[in-house]
View 1 (cartoon, rainbow, N blue to C red):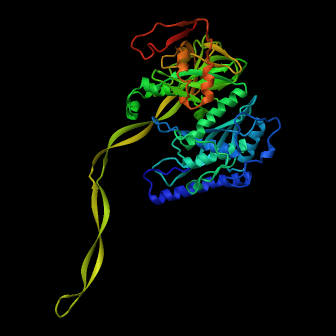
View 2 (view 1 turned 180 degrees about the vertical axis):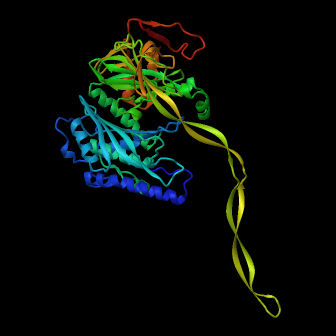
View 3 (view 1 turned 45 degrees about the horizontal axis):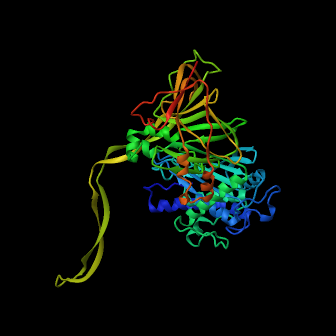
Length: 559
């Protein structure tokens, strides 16, 4: 997508957005050819619903499916780093779907879009996942507005046929910025192709007419607004469909950042707490289903359904404590905590040797992958005085009398002059630089903890929180597989176990959450029986730490 820098001239901006129009028009003919017409007909005829599909609770028309996609479309900015925005959305289909058929429709649609390819495709039961790579024109450096560059735009589409639900997540290239309306149009066009929805209106039409005149429009609650109400009703329908499909529901606590980093501005977080904040912000623990390790519950602050797709949490409920409560829709089964990941800023590769390396580590391994992260800093730079050219008019004598010397005719001239608008001196500016960091992932040799959840169960489970003190490695038991990747055996591994109680859930059973089906689920919630691995011990509480009074640290040590 095209990026118009802030310092670009009006003419340059107009040229860039003209280019943007050309870019999305590459998509528009494909959408229209596939759908038949723009924003009016379903992406495929409704009569071609795949065999095996069936009625689901809370039916959605093709029109409502696209409206829900547009209402859910959200940009999640990286307000600290400013380089990793994520765009996401999800919607519901009109009936039970064959996942292979839905993905086939999506692939046929993508085949009409230039420079778009499928990078990965997989199926697990009723679920399908497609990773898409598209090339979007953009500019590599904001200061070089005349040099175009094509960078990959990464997208993931997930489809769950049992729930009749589909999601799409867009991860732009670093510093790449798109026009929100065009990204929304592209995303909802793709989901319309998969979910047999109506193609959305072209972006320029949004300013002229309402998106749809829907005779089946659901009643709108004015307190949520039009799109907010659609999104709320969509979540209500999603929970009903999930229950109908035999899914299970898991509530787990995660760190509430407002409590750990209270009253801190963006500048303060960048300058004083960047390493700690970013580690907490990207931390994730991974629960894998025992009979299908590819089916996971990934728990972390940034693992929402908007940011990660259908496997992410649907809701995050906040109270006044140190935890937020995240709600996941999962397949029933036994889940094992087998891994974690996080990103560590300003960190080099650890010192290491292979003297004690073993392919069978007692606890497990920690892997390190080198990264380059963008950081922002303020500095003083000298700037010359700035001048602005202004004009004024002046009347002068254009014709003089030869006999009297008087003026016989006057004319008006336009004069130019330079007016200083800013004085010379040192000015504070914000610049960016690339700084080395690490992505740290762990793989445990045995589960740290386990729990089970049955079909239709609603459980609340203790959370396990990863932080900067969780991983310690044996520096003599490492193996470097490439210049940027290495693995080391862990000497110790620990997580903070944060309890969740029935009264925490009871606080959210009222109608104020606006999702009746969720309130009904909470009414029958019960605690999950979590088993912690043998050899795991609870560490004494350390007064004065953030975790004191919030959770208990449990540790595994190598034998």
